[in-house]
Picture 1 (cartoon, rainbow, N blue to C red):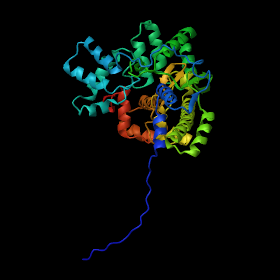
Picture 2: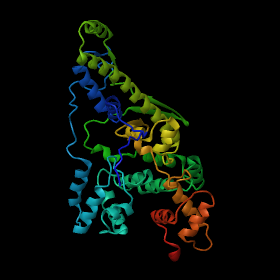
Picture 3: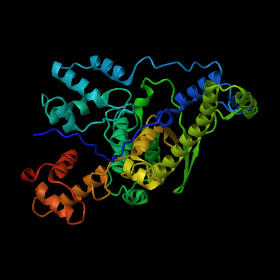
Picture 4: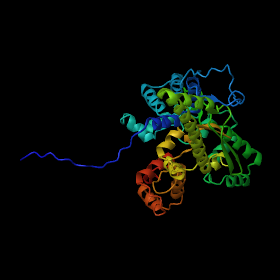
Length: 422
């Protein structure tokens, strides 16, 4: 068999990141603090950049003597592990506790499901053991609220560990776990009809609003946290604005640029041209970064406006893909935007990404809390105990598209026994 040499033409597409695009992507995911430090560094190194007069110094909320390199003495993880010595724990309990702590994110939320932690341990520990340690040990650690899986649980942990009167605690729990969470006014009217005074109800709601929805941030080892956005809400009308205070407004020194360009015509200097291009790139990229953050923040807040205003327990399902589709940007851009970005709200400063809650169904928008309520209602109305499979079939007829194991998972989170024991 002979060997034949032949030329073949083949077309294929490749995506390559240009240096400029890579720099823009890196800039997008910087926190506000990191971006301000980068801008300051660029202004020191690039003579074609200048700060607009009275933009940074006059409006800055920072003390000029403030040390921006200050750090928390302990990370959240170190703080939680240190507190384990306050409990008389067995070796097994310590191992489970450390495993759970490693799955807690910067805000104090448990980032993994119980069954996922079970898998991480390679099934050395069972799900019920992990759940028990979470509730009896981790959720008793300071700052109160860490180890939560949703905002309701975060609030519950803080209320359980507070010193408020028992009567007020009971009222808060009735509000917190009321089945009519979607209509806050109905909860109020129902409880007042049952004999609760308006003052007691309002006092309980005020306690709920005082709860920190990101308790871990006080111990996270990051240099400085400052929000990029601020939301103000009034009767379901909201306004999201980019916080200009303390943010440097920069511009190019056009007089110097024009003068230098005249000289470059006589003698080419690529290094100086690159500095000019870098200055223009920084201006464009910073503006695009801030505008994109504002757009993403506005859309997120439009979906979660009830959570900020009259219903502190209501949060809707929302994903990166939904935001990306609505704003016509790539999901990876949304992911980078949400990284280390914070928003100032009536409930305090919280991470933007904490306002995203995954839908438990691929074909219909439904949060875990909403599904747990549906399961609870279905079981409450059953004449004969229904298996998880039958519940799944019943809900799927309504278009939810849920698997049996999903029903089983959220039934267990509801602390509802299986059909065999009901």
